[in-house]
Image (tube, rainbow, N blue to C red):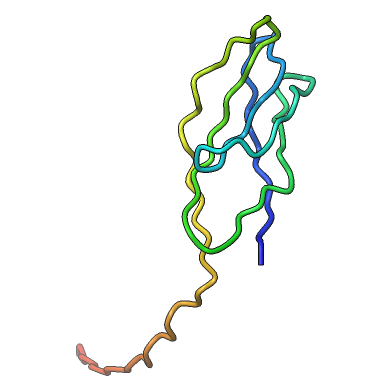
Length: 102
C-alpha cells in the first residue's frame, strides 16, 4: 500500500525561477512553479513512497532562459518510513533500598 505525504521547499530568492523539480532517489517525480511571495514555500502534495525504507529527496530550480539554466541539486533530505512496531519492552523491576539518616 503506498504512503502519501507532502514536502515543503524553501524558494530561492531569484525572480527568474520558472519551476522547481522534485526528485526521489534521483528520479524526477514532480514539478511545481514558483509561488508568490517568494518567502512562501513551494508545497509538493501527494508525494508517494511504495513501502517501508529509506528515500532521498532533492530539488532543482530552473530559470526562464532559453535553454534554461539549472541549479545544482539541493542536499538530499532523507526520509525513513517504518511501520514495524518496536519490540514490547520488558517488565521493569523495583529495587528498594532505604537508608535512614537520624
